[in-house]
Image (cartoon, rainbow, N blue to C red):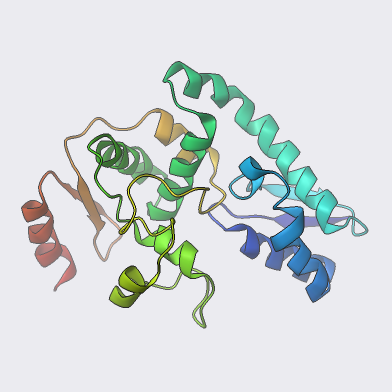
Amino acid sequence: MKWVVIPEGLRKEEIGEILAKTFNWSSEELNKWGNTYTAMKFDYIEGVYFPDTYLIPVTENGLDVSKRMIRHFDEKFAPYISQFAKQNIVWTTGLRLASIVQREAAGKDDMPLIAGILWNRLLKKMNLEIDATVQYARGKTDKGWWAPIKASDITDIDSPYNTYKYKGLPPHPISNPGISAIEAVLNPTETDCLYYLHDNNRQIHCAVTYEEHKTNIEKYLKN
C-alpha cells in the first residue's frame, strides 16, 4: 500500500502524473488513465477525481484507481446534490462552476466572491472570459499545465472551453475541485461586481463596471 496526496484544483492528467510516479506506471498505463479509464462516462470525464489523501494498493491498476476516486467523490458530493436541486441547479453545472472557482481563487476566502461574480456574468449572459478555461483547452506547455495564457491563445484556440469566445460554462469541469469551491458555488457572496483581479499580494479586488476594473488594473497591477 502507498499513500497518495491529490491536491485540490488539478486536472486529471496531473493526477495521472502523480499516480504514475507513485506506482511506476508505464506511459501506456498513464495514457489509458487520461484517455480511456477517465473517459467512460460523459459526466465523469473530469472534476470527479476527488482531491484527498488515498491509501492505495501498489497492485491496483489505473482503472480501479479511477473507480476508487469516483466512489470517494460520490460519497463526498452526495450531501450537495439535494442542495443544488433546491436551487434548481443541475449538479454537473455546479461542479463545472466549482472547478473554475477552484482555479481562479487565491484561497478559500476568495471563493464565495468569485462564485458570486461568475454567477452574475452567467445570469447577464456575459462571456465568462476566464483564463483558466483557456489554459485547460491549451493543455500542457513547456511551463506546465497552467502557464499564463497569451493574447494569441484567446484568439487562436477555437474550443468550447475558450470562455472568451463562447458564452456559458465549458462542457466539463476544468479541474477537480474541493469542498470549499463546491460550497462557494452554493453560497456565493451577493455582489454587484462583474469583474475581479488579484494584486501582487494575492488580495482580490472587484469592480461593478469595466471602467472600474481598468482603474483597478492600473492601481494594483501596473506598479
